[in-house]
Figure 1 (tube, rainbow over the protein chains, first blue to last red):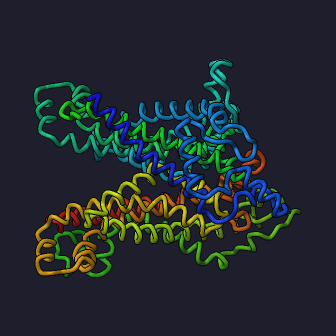
Figure 2 (cartoon, rainbow over the protein chains, first blue to last red):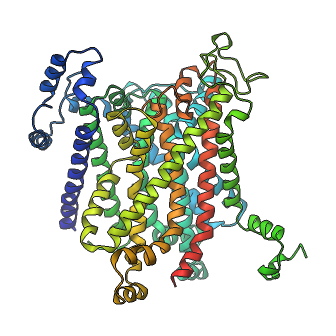
Length: 313
Length: 293
Protein backbone atom coordinates (compact mmCIF):
# COMPACT_ATOMS: atom_id res chain seq x y z
CA UNK A 1 0.00 0.00 0.00
CA UNK A 2 2.83 2.31 0.88
CA UNK A 3 4.44 1.33 -2.36
CA UNK A 4 1.23 2.30 -4.14
CA UNK A 5 1.18 5.71 -2.48
CA UNK A 6 4.77 6.34 -3.49
CA UNK A 7 4.05 5.16 -7.01
CA UNK A 8 1.06 7.46 -7.25
CA UNK A 9 3.02 10.44 -6.02
CA UNK A 10 5.67 9.64 -8.58
CA UNK A 11 2.95 9.32 -11.23
CA UNK A 12 1.72 12.82 -10.54
CA UNK A 13 5.16 14.12 -11.49
CA UNK A 14 4.69 13.49 -15.23
CA UNK A 15 1.29 15.18 -15.08
CA UNK A 16 2.82 18.12 -13.24
CA UNK A 17 5.56 18.11 -15.82
CA UNK A 18 2.97 18.31 -18.57
CA UNK A 19 1.23 21.15 -16.81
CA UNK A 20 4.48 23.03 -16.30
CA UNK A 21 5.47 22.47 -19.90
CA UNK A 22 2.05 23.49 -21.11
CA UNK A 23 2.14 26.71 -19.13
CA UNK A 24 5.66 27.40 -20.33
CA UNK A 25 4.68 26.92 -23.95
CA UNK A 26 1.52 28.94 -23.52
CA UNK A 27 3.57 31.88 -22.34
CA UNK A 28 6.13 31.65 -25.10
CA UNK A 29 3.89 30.79 -28.00
CA UNK A 30 1.19 33.38 -27.42
CA UNK A 31 1.27 36.25 -29.86
CA UNK A 32 2.55 39.52 -28.54
CA UNK A 33 5.90 40.26 -27.06
CA UNK A 34 5.83 40.25 -23.25
CA UNK A 35 8.71 42.69 -23.09
CA UNK A 36 6.89 45.14 -25.35
CA UNK A 37 3.74 44.86 -23.27
CA UNK A 38 5.65 45.57 -20.09
CA UNK A 39 7.57 48.43 -21.65
CA UNK A 40 4.37 50.14 -22.71
CA UNK A 41 3.12 51.86 -25.80
CA UNK A 42 5.75 54.54 -26.15
CA UNK A 43 8.90 52.58 -25.40
CA UNK A 44 11.88 52.70 -27.70
CA UNK A 45 13.20 49.48 -29.27
CA UNK A 46 16.26 49.72 -27.04
CA UNK A 47 14.12 49.83 -23.90
CA UNK A 48 12.17 46.81 -25.08
CA UNK A 49 15.35 44.90 -25.78
CA UNK A 50 16.68 45.84 -22.36
CA UNK A 51 13.59 44.47 -20.71
CA UNK A 52 13.75 41.36 -22.81
CA UNK A 53 17.31 40.69 -21.70
CA UNK A 54 16.34 41.40 -18.10
CA UNK A 55 13.59 38.81 -18.28
CA UNK A 56 15.85 36.28 -19.92
CA UNK A 57 13.65 36.13 -23.00
CA UNK A 58 16.45 36.70 -25.50
CA UNK A 59 17.99 33.29 -24.91
CA UNK A 60 17.13 30.41 -27.25
CA UNK A 61 14.03 28.52 -26.28
CA UNK A 62 15.71 25.34 -25.04
CA UNK A 63 17.95 27.38 -22.75
CA UNK A 64 14.89 29.11 -21.35
CA UNK A 65 13.26 25.73 -20.80
CA UNK A 66 16.37 24.43 -19.05
CA UNK A 67 16.47 27.46 -16.76
CA UNK A 68 12.75 27.08 -16.04
CA UNK A 69 13.08 23.41 -15.16
CA UNK A 70 16.17 23.98 -13.07
CA UNK A 71 14.46 26.74 -11.12
CA UNK A 72 11.40 24.61 -10.59
CA UNK A 73 13.50 21.79 -9.20
CA UNK A 74 14.97 24.20 -6.69
CA UNK A 75 11.49 25.45 -5.79
CA UNK A 76 12.16 28.83 -7.29
CA UNK A 77 9.09 30.07 -9.08
CA UNK A 78 10.72 33.14 -10.48
CA UNK A 79 10.03 36.77 -9.84
CA UNK A 80 6.99 38.85 -10.56
CA UNK A 81 7.50 40.78 -13.76
CA UNK A 82 6.04 43.92 -12.30
CA UNK A 83 7.01 44.06 -8.67
CA UNK A 84 10.19 41.96 -8.93
CA UNK A 85 9.19 40.22 -5.72
CA UNK A 86 9.74 36.48 -5.57
CA UNK A 87 6.59 34.69 -6.68
CA UNK A 88 6.97 32.23 -3.86
CA UNK A 89 6.79 35.00 -1.27
CA UNK A 90 3.71 36.49 -2.88
CA UNK A 91 2.00 33.12 -2.86
CA UNK A 92 2.90 32.47 0.77
CA UNK A 93 1.41 35.80 1.79
CA UNK A 94 -1.86 35.17 0.04
CA UNK A 95 -2.46 31.54 0.59
CA UNK A 96 -4.20 31.76 3.95
CA UNK A 97 -7.55 33.33 2.93
CA UNK A 98 -7.80 31.02 -0.07
CA UNK A 99 -7.08 27.89 1.92
CA UNK A 100 -9.49 28.91 4.69
CA UNK A 101 -12.23 29.62 2.18
CA UNK A 102 -11.68 26.33 0.37
CA UNK A 103 -11.71 24.27 3.57
CA UNK A 104 -14.79 25.96 4.99
CA UNK A 105 -16.63 25.59 1.68
CA UNK A 106 -15.76 21.91 1.45
CA UNK A 107 -16.89 21.34 5.03
CA UNK A 108 -20.17 23.17 4.57
CA UNK A 109 -20.93 21.59 1.22
CA UNK A 110 -20.12 18.02 2.22
CA UNK A 111 -21.91 18.19 5.55
CA UNK A 112 -25.09 19.54 3.97
CA UNK A 113 -25.09 17.89 0.57
CA UNK A 114 -24.69 14.28 1.62
CA UNK A 115 -27.56 14.19 4.13
CA UNK A 116 -29.73 16.08 1.65
CA UNK A 117 -28.91 13.64 -1.12
CA UNK A 118 -29.59 10.64 1.08
CA UNK A 119 -32.91 12.15 2.13
CA UNK A 120 -33.91 12.75 -1.46
CA UNK A 121 -32.98 9.21 -2.44
CA UNK A 122 -34.85 7.72 0.49
CA UNK A 123 -38.00 9.63 -0.27
CA UNK A 124 -37.62 9.30 -4.02
CA UNK A 125 -40.57 10.60 -6.02
CA UNK A 126 -41.98 12.61 -3.13
CA UNK A 127 -42.27 16.35 -2.77
CA UNK A 128 -39.07 16.48 -0.74
CA UNK A 129 -37.25 14.73 -3.53
CA UNK A 130 -38.61 17.14 -6.13
CA UNK A 131 -37.68 20.12 -3.97
CA UNK A 132 -34.14 18.85 -3.50
CA UNK A 133 -33.73 18.22 -7.23
CA UNK A 134 -34.98 21.69 -8.06
CA UNK A 135 -32.45 23.07 -5.61
CA UNK A 136 -29.72 20.94 -7.15
CA UNK A 137 -30.33 21.93 -10.76
CA UNK A 138 -31.01 25.55 -9.88
CA UNK A 139 -28.01 25.84 -7.61
CA UNK A 140 -25.74 24.44 -10.25
CA UNK A 141 -26.92 26.91 -12.86
CA UNK A 142 -26.54 30.06 -10.80
CA UNK A 143 -23.39 32.01 -11.60
CA UNK A 144 -21.21 32.34 -8.51
CA UNK A 145 -20.63 36.06 -8.78
CA UNK A 146 -24.30 36.88 -9.20
CA UNK A 147 -25.21 34.81 -6.18
CA UNK A 148 -22.47 36.54 -4.22
CA UNK A 149 -23.87 39.95 -5.04
CA UNK A 150 -27.40 38.87 -4.29
CA UNK A 151 -26.44 37.58 -0.87
CA UNK A 152 -24.27 40.61 -0.26
CA UNK A 153 -27.16 42.91 -1.14
CA UNK A 154 -29.64 41.03 1.01
CA UNK A 155 -27.55 40.43 4.09
CA UNK A 156 -25.06 43.25 4.13
CA UNK A 157 -26.64 46.20 2.41
CA UNK A 158 -30.27 45.78 3.28
CA UNK A 159 -30.21 43.84 6.54
CA UNK A 160 -26.75 44.92 7.66
CA UNK A 161 -26.17 41.61 9.40
CA UNK A 162 -22.83 40.73 7.91
CA UNK A 163 -19.83 42.69 6.69
CA UNK A 164 -19.83 43.51 3.00
CA UNK A 165 -16.30 42.57 2.09
CA UNK A 166 -12.90 41.72 3.36
CA UNK A 167 -11.11 39.10 5.31
CA UNK A 168 -10.13 39.08 8.97
CA UNK A 169 -7.53 36.63 10.11
CA UNK A 170 -8.31 34.04 12.71
CA UNK A 171 -5.79 35.57 15.06
CA UNK A 172 -7.63 38.87 15.16
CA UNK A 173 -10.71 37.46 16.77
CA UNK A 174 -12.86 34.49 16.07
CA UNK A 175 -16.17 36.32 15.65
CA UNK A 176 -15.04 38.78 12.99
CA UNK A 177 -13.27 35.87 11.32
CA UNK A 178 -16.49 33.89 11.08
CA UNK A 179 -18.65 36.86 10.14
CA UNK A 180 -16.42 37.77 7.23
CA UNK A 181 -16.32 34.18 6.11
CA UNK A 182 -20.05 33.42 6.09
CA UNK A 183 -21.13 35.05 2.83
CA UNK A 184 -18.22 33.86 0.68
CA UNK A 185 -18.54 30.33 2.01
CA UNK A 186 -22.27 30.13 1.40
CA UNK A 187 -21.89 31.62 -2.08
CA UNK A 188 -19.22 29.21 -3.18
CA UNK A 189 -20.69 26.31 -1.25
CA UNK A 190 -24.08 26.46 -2.90
CA UNK A 191 -22.86 25.48 -6.33
CA UNK A 192 -20.66 22.72 -5.00
CA UNK A 193 -23.49 21.52 -2.80
CA UNK A 194 -25.89 21.37 -5.73
CA UNK A 195 -23.58 19.12 -7.71
CA UNK A 196 -22.81 16.89 -4.75
CA UNK A 197 -26.46 16.53 -3.78
CA UNK A 198 -27.35 15.35 -7.25
CA UNK A 199 -24.61 12.76 -7.39
CA UNK A 200 -25.34 11.57 -3.85
CA UNK A 201 -29.00 11.15 -4.62
CA UNK A 202 -28.35 9.26 -7.86
CA UNK A 203 -25.79 6.98 -6.28
CA UNK A 204 -27.76 6.20 -3.13
CA UNK A 205 -30.89 5.66 -5.20
CA UNK A 206 -29.13 3.02 -7.23
CA UNK A 207 -27.75 1.31 -4.14
CA UNK A 208 -31.15 1.24 -2.46
CA UNK A 209 -32.39 -1.13 -5.15
CA UNK A 210 -29.92 -3.76 -4.05
CA UNK A 211 -30.71 -7.07 -2.44
CA UNK A 212 -28.65 -6.49 0.66
CA UNK A 213 -30.63 -3.35 1.46
CA UNK A 214 -33.79 -5.35 1.17
CA UNK A 215 -32.30 -7.94 3.51
CA UNK A 216 -31.27 -5.33 6.03
CA UNK A 217 -34.75 -3.86 6.03
CA UNK A 218 -36.32 -7.28 6.33
CA UNK A 219 -34.07 -8.05 9.28
CA UNK A 220 -35.55 -5.03 10.99
CA UNK A 221 -32.48 -2.84 10.96
CA UNK A 222 -33.46 0.74 11.73
CA UNK A 223 -33.90 2.93 8.62
CA UNK A 224 -31.24 5.34 9.87
CA UNK A 225 -28.66 2.61 10.16
CA UNK A 226 -29.64 1.11 6.80
CA UNK A 227 -29.22 4.44 5.08
CA UNK A 228 -26.14 5.76 6.75
CA UNK A 229 -24.16 2.59 7.16
CA UNK A 230 -25.18 0.11 4.51
CA UNK A 231 -26.40 2.34 1.72
CA UNK A 232 -23.96 5.20 2.12
CA UNK A 233 -20.89 3.02 2.30
CA UNK A 234 -21.77 1.30 -0.91
CA UNK A 235 -22.76 4.50 -2.62
CA UNK A 236 -19.72 6.39 -1.44
CA UNK A 237 -17.35 5.82 -4.32
CA UNK A 238 -19.02 8.02 -6.94
CA UNK A 239 -19.66 10.62 -4.24
CA UNK A 240 -16.04 10.80 -3.19
CA UNK A 241 -14.97 10.91 -6.84
CA UNK A 242 -17.22 13.89 -7.42
CA UNK A 243 -15.77 15.64 -4.39
CA UNK A 244 -12.40 15.35 -6.05
CA UNK A 245 -13.60 16.40 -9.48
CA UNK A 246 -15.66 19.26 -8.09
CA UNK A 247 -12.52 20.59 -6.49
CA UNK A 248 -11.43 22.00 -9.84
CA UNK A 249 -14.73 23.82 -10.03
CA UNK A 250 -14.08 25.05 -6.54
CA UNK A 251 -10.76 26.57 -7.57
CA UNK A 252 -12.41 28.50 -10.37
CA UNK A 253 -15.12 29.61 -7.98
CA UNK A 254 -12.57 30.73 -5.40
CA UNK A 255 -11.03 33.11 -7.92
CA UNK A 256 -14.39 34.72 -8.60
CA UNK A 257 -15.58 34.76 -4.99
CA UNK A 258 -12.40 36.42 -3.84
CA UNK A 259 -12.95 39.06 -6.48
CA UNK A 260 -16.52 39.68 -5.39
CA UNK A 261 -15.87 39.80 -1.66
CA UNK A 262 -12.42 41.42 -1.84
CA UNK A 263 -10.60 38.62 -0.05
CA UNK A 264 -6.83 39.04 -0.36
CA UNK A 265 -6.12 35.53 -1.51
CA UNK A 266 -4.51 33.64 -4.37
CA UNK A 267 -7.51 34.17 -6.61
CA UNK A 268 -7.16 37.91 -6.48
CA UNK A 269 -3.42 37.58 -7.00
CA UNK A 270 -4.12 35.65 -10.18
CA UNK A 271 -6.67 38.11 -11.47
CA UNK A 272 -4.40 41.05 -10.85
CA UNK A 273 -1.56 39.20 -12.55
CA UNK A 274 -3.81 38.54 -15.54
CA UNK A 275 -4.78 42.14 -15.89
CA UNK A 276 -1.13 43.19 -15.62
CA UNK A 277 0.09 40.35 -17.81
CA UNK A 278 2.48 39.18 -15.13
CA UNK A 279 3.41 35.80 -16.55
CA UNK A 280 5.60 34.61 -13.69
CA UNK A 281 2.78 34.87 -11.21
CA UNK A 282 0.30 33.25 -13.59
CA UNK A 283 2.70 30.36 -14.15
CA UNK A 284 3.39 29.96 -10.46
CA UNK A 285 -0.20 30.09 -9.27
CA UNK A 286 -1.41 27.76 -12.02
CA UNK A 287 1.23 25.24 -11.01
CA UNK A 288 0.28 25.48 -7.34
CA UNK A 289 -3.41 25.00 -8.04
CA UNK A 290 -2.75 22.06 -10.33
CA UNK A 291 -0.50 20.47 -7.75
CA UNK A 292 -3.16 20.81 -5.06
CA UNK A 293 -5.72 19.36 -7.45
CA UNK A 294 -3.47 16.37 -8.13
CA UNK A 295 -3.02 15.88 -4.39
CA UNK A 296 -6.77 15.98 -3.84
CA UNK A 297 -7.25 13.32 -6.49
CA UNK A 298 -4.62 11.19 -4.81
CA UNK A 299 -6.41 11.48 -1.47
CA UNK A 300 -9.67 10.56 -3.19
CA UNK A 301 -8.12 7.47 -4.73
CA UNK A 302 -6.60 6.43 -1.43
CA UNK A 303 -9.91 6.89 0.34
CA UNK A 304 -11.38 4.22 -1.94
CA UNK A 305 -9.47 1.62 0.06
CA UNK A 306 -11.06 2.85 3.26
CA UNK A 307 -14.55 2.73 1.81
CA UNK A 308 -14.35 -0.53 -0.05
CA UNK A 309 -12.05 -3.10 1.61
CA UNK A 310 -12.07 -5.12 -1.56
CA UNK A 311 -9.98 -2.47 -3.25
CA UNK A 312 -6.34 -3.03 -2.60
CA UNK A 313 -3.52 -1.34 -4.36
CA UNK B 1 -60.00 9.45 -27.22
CA UNK B 2 -57.99 12.26 -25.63
CA UNK B 3 -57.72 10.71 -22.18
CA UNK B 4 -56.00 7.48 -23.13
CA UNK B 5 -53.62 8.20 -25.96
CA UNK B 6 -51.07 5.85 -24.35
CA UNK B 7 -53.12 2.79 -25.16
CA UNK B 8 -53.50 3.68 -28.80
CA UNK B 9 -50.71 2.65 -31.17
CA UNK B 10 -48.40 5.48 -32.07
CA UNK B 11 -49.38 5.61 -35.74
CA UNK B 12 -53.02 6.29 -34.93
CA UNK B 13 -52.35 9.47 -32.96
CA UNK B 14 -52.83 12.86 -34.47
CA UNK B 15 -49.93 15.26 -34.64
CA UNK B 16 -51.45 17.31 -31.87
CA UNK B 17 -51.69 14.27 -29.62
CA UNK B 18 -48.14 13.25 -30.42
CA UNK B 19 -46.92 16.70 -29.51
CA UNK B 20 -48.81 16.79 -26.24
CA UNK B 21 -47.59 13.33 -25.31
CA UNK B 22 -44.02 14.42 -25.95
CA UNK B 23 -44.41 17.39 -23.67
CA UNK B 24 -45.96 15.28 -20.95
CA UNK B 25 -43.23 12.69 -21.07
CA UNK B 26 -40.26 15.03 -21.29
CA UNK B 27 -41.09 18.09 -19.22
CA UNK B 28 -37.51 19.04 -18.37
CA UNK B 29 -36.35 18.92 -21.94
CA UNK B 30 -39.32 20.90 -23.19
CA UNK B 31 -38.95 23.51 -20.44
CA UNK B 32 -35.24 23.87 -21.07
CA UNK B 33 -35.63 23.95 -24.80
CA UNK B 34 -38.40 26.52 -24.64
CA UNK B 35 -36.43 28.84 -22.34
CA UNK B 36 -33.36 28.51 -24.49
CA UNK B 37 -35.38 29.23 -27.61
CA UNK B 38 -36.67 32.39 -25.95
CA UNK B 39 -33.08 33.46 -25.28
CA UNK B 40 -32.13 32.81 -28.89
CA UNK B 41 -35.09 34.87 -30.05
CA UNK B 42 -33.97 37.62 -27.69
CA UNK B 43 -30.48 37.53 -29.11
CA UNK B 44 -31.37 37.41 -32.78
CA UNK B 45 -34.24 39.89 -32.68
CA UNK B 46 -32.48 42.34 -30.37
CA UNK B 47 -32.93 45.42 -32.55
CA UNK B 48 -36.67 44.80 -32.82
CA UNK B 49 -37.41 44.43 -29.14
CA UNK B 50 -37.77 48.07 -28.17
CA UNK B 51 -34.07 48.48 -27.56
CA UNK B 52 -31.94 51.55 -28.09
CA UNK B 53 -28.24 51.73 -28.87
CA UNK B 54 -26.63 49.80 -26.02
CA UNK B 55 -23.41 51.81 -26.01
CA UNK B 56 -24.91 55.25 -26.29
CA UNK B 57 -24.12 57.24 -23.19
CA UNK B 58 -26.51 59.72 -21.72
CA UNK B 59 -25.07 61.09 -18.48
CA UNK B 60 -28.18 63.14 -17.73
CA UNK B 61 -30.06 59.92 -17.20
CA UNK B 62 -27.50 58.10 -15.08
CA UNK B 63 -28.50 55.56 -12.45
CA UNK B 64 -32.24 55.76 -12.91
CA UNK B 65 -34.18 52.98 -11.22
CA UNK B 66 -36.21 50.63 -13.41
CA UNK B 67 -39.23 52.52 -14.65
CA UNK B 68 -41.30 53.54 -17.64
CA UNK B 69 -38.71 54.68 -20.16
CA UNK B 70 -36.00 52.31 -19.02
CA UNK B 71 -37.39 48.92 -18.10
CA UNK B 72 -34.21 47.83 -16.36
CA UNK B 73 -33.02 51.27 -15.38
CA UNK B 74 -29.86 53.00 -16.55
CA UNK B 75 -26.26 52.52 -15.61
CA UNK B 76 -23.58 54.89 -14.41
CA UNK B 77 -23.07 56.35 -17.88
CA UNK B 78 -26.75 56.66 -18.63
CA UNK B 79 -26.84 53.67 -20.95
CA UNK B 80 -30.13 51.81 -21.06
CA UNK B 81 -29.71 48.65 -19.02
CA UNK B 82 -32.47 46.74 -20.81
CA UNK B 83 -30.84 47.20 -24.20
CA UNK B 84 -27.46 46.21 -22.82
CA UNK B 85 -28.83 43.05 -21.29
CA UNK B 86 -30.67 42.08 -24.47
CA UNK B 87 -27.62 42.71 -26.65
CA UNK B 88 -25.46 40.95 -24.08
CA UNK B 89 -27.33 37.75 -24.78
CA UNK B 90 -25.78 37.71 -28.23
CA UNK B 91 -22.24 37.31 -26.96
CA UNK B 92 -23.08 34.69 -24.37
CA UNK B 93 -25.10 32.53 -26.73
CA UNK B 94 -22.64 32.93 -29.58
CA UNK B 95 -19.68 31.97 -27.44
CA UNK B 96 -21.62 29.11 -25.89
CA UNK B 97 -22.68 27.60 -29.18
CA UNK B 98 -19.32 28.06 -30.89
CA UNK B 99 -17.46 26.43 -28.03
CA UNK B 100 -19.95 23.57 -27.85
CA UNK B 101 -19.78 22.86 -31.57
CA UNK B 102 -16.01 23.22 -31.88
CA UNK B 103 -15.20 21.25 -28.74
CA UNK B 104 -17.58 18.48 -29.82
CA UNK B 105 -16.17 18.23 -33.33
CA UNK B 106 -12.53 18.36 -32.30
CA UNK B 107 -13.14 16.15 -29.27
CA UNK B 108 -14.94 13.63 -31.45
CA UNK B 109 -12.09 13.45 -33.91
CA UNK B 110 -9.42 13.09 -31.24
CA UNK B 111 -11.52 10.67 -29.21
CA UNK B 112 -12.20 8.42 -32.20
CA UNK B 113 -8.51 8.20 -32.99
CA UNK B 114 -7.46 7.80 -29.37
CA UNK B 115 -9.98 5.05 -28.73
CA UNK B 116 -9.22 3.02 -31.80
CA UNK B 117 -5.55 3.51 -32.54
CA UNK B 118 -3.85 1.90 -29.58
CA UNK B 119 -0.42 3.33 -30.20
CA UNK B 120 -1.62 6.94 -30.00
CA UNK B 121 -4.00 6.35 -27.13
CA UNK B 122 -1.49 6.65 -24.31
CA UNK B 123 0.10 9.87 -25.40
CA UNK B 124 -3.17 11.53 -26.32
CA UNK B 125 -4.65 10.72 -22.93
CA UNK B 126 -1.56 12.00 -21.14
CA UNK B 127 -1.92 15.34 -22.93
CA UNK B 128 -5.63 15.44 -22.14
CA UNK B 129 -4.95 14.66 -18.47
CA UNK B 130 -2.43 17.45 -18.42
CA UNK B 131 -4.96 19.92 -19.77
CA UNK B 132 -7.63 18.66 -17.41
CA UNK B 133 -5.30 19.15 -14.46
CA UNK B 134 -5.63 22.89 -15.04
CA UNK B 135 -8.88 24.29 -13.68
CA UNK B 136 -11.12 25.68 -16.46
CA UNK B 137 -11.14 29.27 -15.39
CA UNK B 138 -7.41 29.46 -14.77
CA UNK B 139 -6.59 28.00 -18.13
CA UNK B 140 -8.92 30.42 -19.85
CA UNK B 141 -7.59 33.37 -17.86
CA UNK B 142 -4.00 32.47 -18.65
CA UNK B 143 -4.70 32.11 -22.33
CA UNK B 144 -6.62 35.35 -22.64
CA UNK B 145 -4.04 37.18 -20.56
CA UNK B 146 -1.30 36.17 -22.92
CA UNK B 147 -3.17 37.11 -26.05
CA UNK B 148 -5.68 39.89 -26.18
CA UNK B 149 -9.06 40.08 -24.53
CA UNK B 150 -11.32 39.38 -27.49
CA UNK B 151 -14.29 37.16 -28.22
CA UNK B 152 -12.24 34.94 -30.53
CA UNK B 153 -9.57 34.32 -27.91
CA UNK B 154 -12.18 33.53 -25.29
CA UNK B 155 -13.67 30.94 -27.62
CA UNK B 156 -10.26 29.37 -28.30
CA UNK B 157 -9.42 29.26 -24.59
CA UNK B 158 -12.72 27.64 -23.73
CA UNK B 159 -12.45 25.11 -26.54
CA UNK B 160 -9.03 24.08 -25.24
CA UNK B 161 -10.34 23.56 -21.74
CA UNK B 162 -13.56 21.76 -22.73
CA UNK B 163 -12.25 19.43 -25.44
CA UNK B 164 -10.65 16.90 -23.03
CA UNK B 165 -14.08 16.24 -21.51
CA UNK B 166 -15.46 15.30 -24.89
CA UNK B 167 -12.38 13.26 -25.78
CA UNK B 168 -12.73 11.25 -22.60
CA UNK B 169 -16.37 10.52 -23.30
CA UNK B 170 -15.86 9.48 -26.91
CA UNK B 171 -12.80 7.41 -26.09
CA UNK B 172 -14.70 5.56 -23.37
CA UNK B 173 -17.41 4.59 -25.83
CA UNK B 174 -14.95 3.55 -28.51
CA UNK B 175 -13.02 1.38 -26.07
CA UNK B 176 -16.17 -0.63 -25.46
CA UNK B 177 -17.26 -0.64 -29.07
CA UNK B 178 -14.05 -1.80 -30.63
CA UNK B 179 -14.44 -5.24 -29.08
CA UNK B 180 -17.85 -5.68 -30.67
CA UNK B 181 -18.36 -8.28 -33.41
CA UNK B 182 -19.49 -5.76 -36.00
CA UNK B 183 -16.18 -3.95 -35.76
CA UNK B 184 -14.30 -7.21 -36.07
CA UNK B 185 -16.28 -8.18 -39.13
CA UNK B 186 -15.73 -4.80 -40.71
CA UNK B 187 -11.99 -5.22 -40.27
CA UNK B 188 -12.20 -8.76 -41.60
CA UNK B 189 -14.01 -7.52 -44.68
CA UNK B 190 -11.10 -5.23 -45.34
CA UNK B 191 -12.48 -1.88 -44.28
CA UNK B 192 -9.82 0.76 -43.92
CA UNK B 193 -9.41 2.77 -40.74
CA UNK B 194 -11.23 5.95 -41.79
CA UNK B 195 -14.21 3.98 -42.96
CA UNK B 196 -14.41 2.02 -39.73
CA UNK B 197 -14.20 5.20 -37.72
CA UNK B 198 -16.76 7.15 -39.67
CA UNK B 199 -19.20 4.53 -40.81
CA UNK B 200 -19.30 2.17 -37.83
CA UNK B 201 -18.05 3.90 -34.70
CA UNK B 202 -19.12 7.50 -35.09
CA UNK B 203 -22.90 6.93 -35.25
CA UNK B 204 -22.77 5.23 -31.88
CA UNK B 205 -21.13 8.18 -30.22
CA UNK B 206 -23.60 10.79 -31.39
CA UNK B 207 -26.23 10.50 -28.66
CA UNK B 208 -23.95 10.93 -25.62
CA UNK B 209 -21.98 13.50 -27.58
CA UNK B 210 -25.02 15.70 -28.03
CA UNK B 211 -25.83 15.46 -24.33
CA UNK B 212 -22.26 16.30 -23.38
CA UNK B 213 -22.36 19.14 -25.88
CA UNK B 214 -25.16 20.82 -23.98
CA UNK B 215 -23.20 20.62 -20.74
CA UNK B 216 -20.15 22.02 -22.52
CA UNK B 217 -22.29 24.91 -23.74
CA UNK B 218 -23.53 25.60 -20.21
CA UNK B 219 -19.96 25.61 -18.90
CA UNK B 220 -18.85 27.86 -21.73
CA UNK B 221 -21.55 30.44 -21.06
CA UNK B 222 -20.73 30.41 -17.36
CA UNK B 223 -16.96 30.67 -17.78
CA UNK B 224 -17.28 33.38 -20.44
CA UNK B 225 -19.37 35.43 -18.03
CA UNK B 226 -16.86 34.80 -15.27
CA UNK B 227 -13.98 35.83 -17.50
CA UNK B 228 -15.73 39.00 -18.58
CA UNK B 229 -16.54 39.73 -14.97
CA UNK B 230 -12.87 39.49 -14.06
CA UNK B 231 -11.92 41.68 -16.99
CA UNK B 232 -10.24 38.93 -18.95
CA UNK B 233 -13.02 38.15 -21.40
CA UNK B 234 -15.10 40.13 -23.83
CA UNK B 235 -13.65 43.61 -24.23
CA UNK B 236 -15.53 46.37 -22.44
CA UNK B 237 -16.92 48.00 -25.62
CA UNK B 238 -19.10 44.99 -26.35
CA UNK B 239 -21.78 44.47 -23.74
CA UNK B 240 -21.76 40.98 -22.33
CA UNK B 241 -23.55 39.91 -19.18
CA UNK B 242 -20.27 39.45 -17.33
CA UNK B 243 -19.01 42.84 -18.50
CA UNK B 244 -22.15 44.62 -17.41
CA UNK B 245 -21.92 43.09 -13.98
CA UNK B 246 -18.24 43.95 -13.68
CA UNK B 247 -18.97 47.60 -14.29
CA UNK B 248 -21.90 47.50 -11.91
CA UNK B 249 -20.09 46.02 -8.96
CA UNK B 250 -19.25 49.34 -7.36
CA UNK B 251 -22.91 50.28 -7.45
CA UNK B 252 -24.34 47.58 -5.20
CA UNK B 253 -25.92 50.11 -2.90
CA UNK B 254 -27.15 52.71 -5.34
CA UNK B 255 -27.99 50.69 -8.40
CA UNK B 256 -28.55 47.07 -7.58
CA UNK B 257 -30.79 46.58 -10.63
CA UNK B 258 -27.65 46.79 -12.75
CA UNK B 259 -26.43 43.57 -11.18
CA UNK B 260 -29.80 41.90 -10.82
CA UNK B 261 -30.98 41.72 -14.41
CA UNK B 262 -27.89 40.54 -16.29
CA UNK B 263 -27.34 37.89 -13.65
CA UNK B 264 -30.96 36.84 -13.84
CA UNK B 265 -30.76 36.37 -17.58
CA UNK B 266 -27.45 34.57 -17.25
CA UNK B 267 -28.82 32.20 -14.63
CA UNK B 268 -31.93 31.53 -16.70
CA UNK B 269 -29.88 30.77 -19.80
CA UNK B 270 -27.57 28.37 -17.98
CA UNK B 271 -30.53 26.76 -16.27
CA UNK B 272 -32.33 26.25 -19.56
CA UNK B 273 -29.26 24.65 -21.15
CA UNK B 274 -28.81 22.34 -18.16
CA UNK B 275 -32.47 21.34 -18.22
CA UNK B 276 -32.26 20.68 -21.93
CA UNK B 277 -29.18 18.54 -21.39
CA UNK B 278 -30.80 16.57 -18.59
CA UNK B 279 -33.91 16.03 -20.63
CA UNK B 280 -31.93 14.93 -23.66
CA UNK B 281 -29.94 12.54 -21.54
CA UNK B 282 -33.07 10.94 -20.14
CA UNK B 283 -34.50 10.72 -23.61
CA UNK B 284 -31.49 9.41 -25.47
CA UNK B 285 -29.54 7.32 -23.01
CA UNK B 286 -31.84 4.36 -22.38
CA UNK B 287 -32.33 4.07 -26.10
CA UNK B 288 -28.63 4.22 -26.59
CA UNK B 289 -28.16 1.42 -24.09
CA UNK B 290 -30.82 -0.63 -25.83
CA UNK B 291 -29.19 -0.09 -29.19
CA UNK B 292 -25.90 -1.28 -27.82
CA UNK B 293 -27.41 -4.62 -26.96
